[in-house]
Image 1 (cartoon, one colour):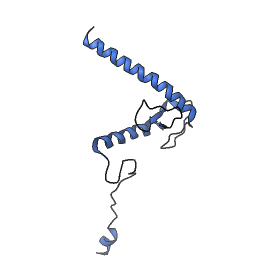
Image 2: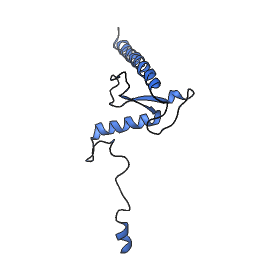
Image 3: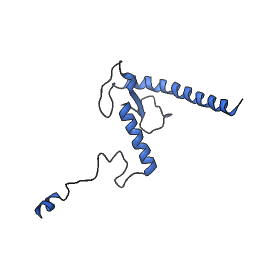
Image 4: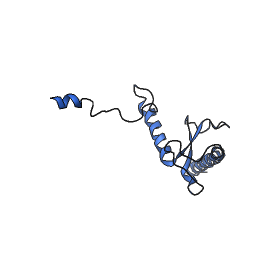
Amino acid sequence: MTIQSVGNKIIADARRYKEDREKGYRERALKLYAWVCGRCTREFTHKNLAELTVHHKNHNHDDNPSDGSNWELLCLYCHDNEHARYEEQVRYGADEKGSSEDNVGGTHNPFLDLKSLLNK
């Protein structure tokens, strides 16, 4: 067996494991929760249900309690955004206000000193 074939087998096994794991918790989450994105509140039907994903709140895909307490349903876009924010927090750390979850929106205020500027 070549190194490439061993690598291909490992990748195929990992993909199969991921798909099997997702089938279990995804089906349970879709039964527990309304088919609505937890962030943007977009509603889903059987027609577009493939665009609704299960997000693990603690980012551990192996943490799947039967009550669904570690899951939330997010649309593809909000799910991608959540993971991008998480990666940014891991890479750069939380700011002085706390985690990136606490910091909603920008911090720059271009009108902060506008009154004094207009009075000049």
